[in-house]
Image (cartoon, rainbow, N blue to C red; front, side, top):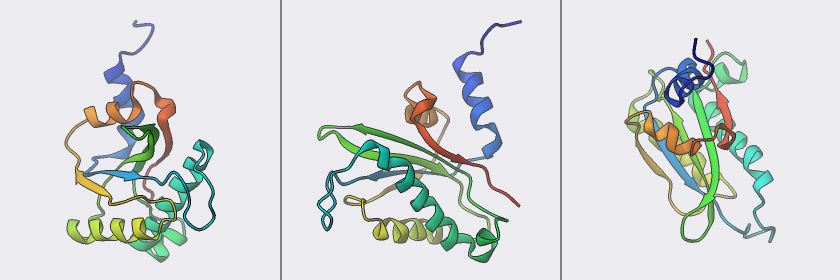
Length: 152
């Protein structure tokens, strides 16, 4: 028996319960809050990601989410990177069956517009394959700050 799992099996085990992802989203974050003159700190990533997903679930499922019956399958990673060392989230999710894809994408954009820390536009693309999950993790599951399976 193999003493450790290879990376492909590890990713499959970790993400296997989430079902099939349909959308990959990138959200850039501000370095400084415009009203409170507070600088972004890495420890703000998890509460900000939770705020975003909470508002999106409320918008998509309404009372079914509030009663803890339904929520989106979501995996979010956080990192600082790029030319300006800008903080950002990578997110994968599945659009719910009761919504058209374009309507779900508009809901994501609506919640993004209400985020205090969002910077610029949001990038929403079709989720193509598992390598994007490896890219999100950068070989390290510690990059994953939030993961939730759907209920109901």
